Image: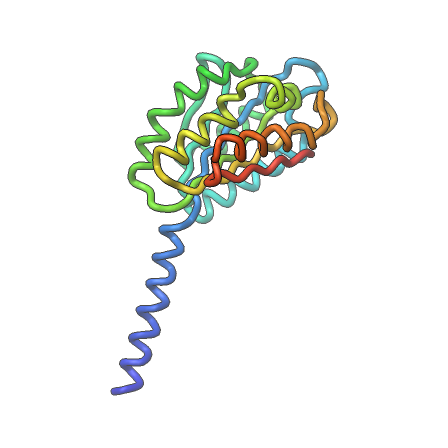
Length: 201
């Protein structure tokens, strides 16, 4: 009888651990800039592979996410795993228009807020952008990469991780300059809940 109680307690701890992990798993917000301002400045094969791997993980683990595919007024936004294969096909077969960051943030905001109100864990942004867009982080306001994550971190009092993925070959500035710009914004404005990571491919 005593052994049964011990086993029951262990099972309860195990189930509680699973539940706790599921509650703290990061909600992923994915943004993809599939534009092609020049013949060379595009998402490269390694970036497509990473996007595909993220999609597979989301489908396998049923991870909570929102995906925004920028394309002017013809943008796509989804939180359904059933649409991910179609999104991937669209990435391979066509290119979108150059992003308007303010427009994209405006279109993302309502659904991001709606979904995050029901979520208790941390939040991560995963940006896939071309070199020109990444280079602008140093010289422009970059509302997508600086202001929107900061807004979300403040509004929900959450830890927010931001990963920016871009092709190295077409970067108009050195990666260190982008990292410095992002770090300056985080520290200068006291955004201690935000961490930035720049990955080049």
